Length: 298
Image (cartoon, rainbow, N blue to C red; front, side, top):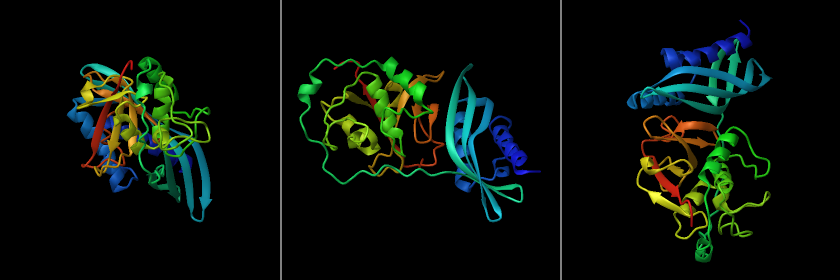
């Protein structure tokens, strides 16, 4: 069997795992990744939900010979049709991965790590924005969600290009909803971008989380106590290690059949993903969440 047939068989087996209950230990994943896949199935089971159909495809395949190994860099596109409470919704995910073939046998398949955007050690913005928040500002959450659905698996060339893109993407969604920028050119002030320069709050997860909490910020967010108080167009922040440093942000774009938020995100691109992120490689039992409702008007 050549590597192409073996690779297609691997993708087919991954689809069988989600729908037909194939043993995860038959897949060439690390222990951590096997746990991640099992977490997703367990989370669905706890919600009385199940994947009834899956479509697993590889895109952007790049092949490279390395001594006795054949290295396959590719983008895994997973689509899951999920049944819950008698209704259905579609979840999609993109992951950059690397497979290693040895003697036409897939010896390993792993997720390609993404380096986080580094936040410089600086004081947080203390400039007064009260005059800004007093202006009339309308938030069109429908437009924000439309943008999130349109660009969830692409990068908009009109905005900065960064490797760890989650917060940059959420900022774009909020801006598409009609929220104006403020604070340039000072990077630790306000929320803004200018292609080659931007505020920390525009691209750094920890900075945006604290900016959302700020009284009188230009975004106009209100913290909520639980995810079920959110609606499409709102934002969820994640501290995966529970150490007070926030790592990730998502936007609520839909609700599942039970009314639980589904989110879109970048970095590992996702559309209509469960907000809990229990199947994330970064997830730990110490995870903390912050839930922000974006005011419709300020």
